[in-house]
Amino acid sequence: MLHGVGVPDPIRILFSFARGRGHLGPLMPLARVAQARGHATELTGTRVVVLAQTGFASLHPDATGDGRGDEGTGTLARPHPDRAYPRMAEVFLGPHAHAAVERVGRIIAERRPHVLVCDEHDFGAMAAAERAGVPCVVVEVLATGYAGWRPDLREGLGRLRAAAGLAPDPALAMLDGDLVIVPFPASLRGPDAVPRPVLRVRPEPPETADA
Picture 1 (spheres, one colour):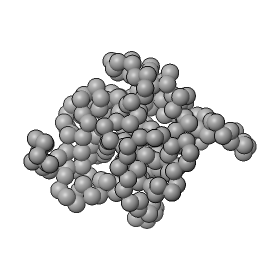
Picture 2: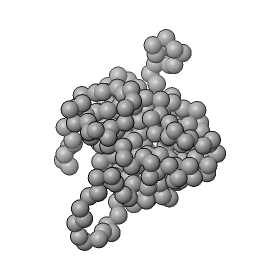
Picture 3: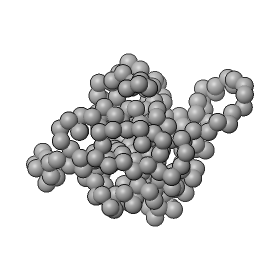
Picture 4: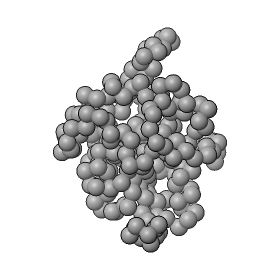
């Protein structure tokens, strides 16, 4: 048994990420450690990224494209210090998030993982895990820990949770899951980082395209 808490060892771990490779990267060291220790790991997320991965017991690609939009303004804009990520809600709380609730929910029902590990912007996966009663580990992907985007997501997260049949979450507790893992040095933390208990792990170099 795992740590004497009634969880079988090895365990089944579902890894999930939102959109592109940058959101999968911080999860990969955790997946490799889990695989090396004999745990069953599965992966779901953007199709083109998921299908390029190896080492997982099962892959569950979504039905979308590469998760990136090619549209842009064509000009550089000066960032506003209070809104460094003005499109956070648009990009991560749109149709992708609502679809992820159902997709990840189906995978959880079929594969019955003991825990879900997702990146900090995979809101649909978080909602699916909460609805299914599966513990959720959230991995930060912003090295500075910047969280100024959180208030902008309150309304969208409320709609996402309501659609998933979940109760309101005015404190945005869902965003912290059951455990937060930070794969970045403490020296990178900015003044806007959320003051919360975290498990800090040693960062690894990003994978190259040839890796």
